[in-house]
Length: 138
Image (cartoon, rainbow, N blue to C red; front, top):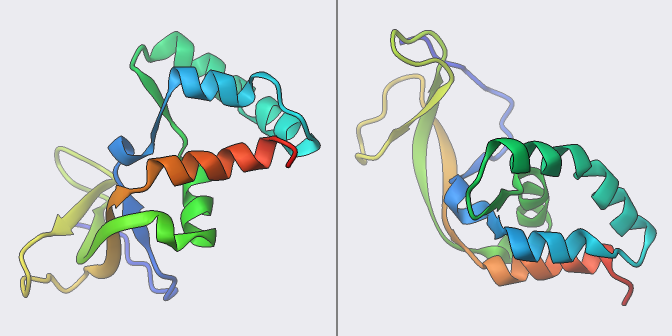
């Protein structure tokens, strides 16, 4: 297995997409009528994303990955449950490329793995209120 070897020392947190889903109804209401400059910026920035998601994915919601990453960085208390495991990224596999490989067994760490925080549960309501506070006047 070829692996991606990051050695910059930056703390890595990883969160599954299921934790990031915002319901379409909430998303539409959130961006419907922004009341400040930040809100108008968010709406214009997410316009292409929203159009693409609606045309190609017909699920119940949207995964807002970048805003979530910023929320965790600024407000780590929205993480309700996490664990630390060793991870690596396969870069030249036979059946996959770029897949995250997590070593779930304690003590079984291949040489090229690096520590990461795996976010298992988040406070979705607090995350949504953080996003709402960006787009609405106080």
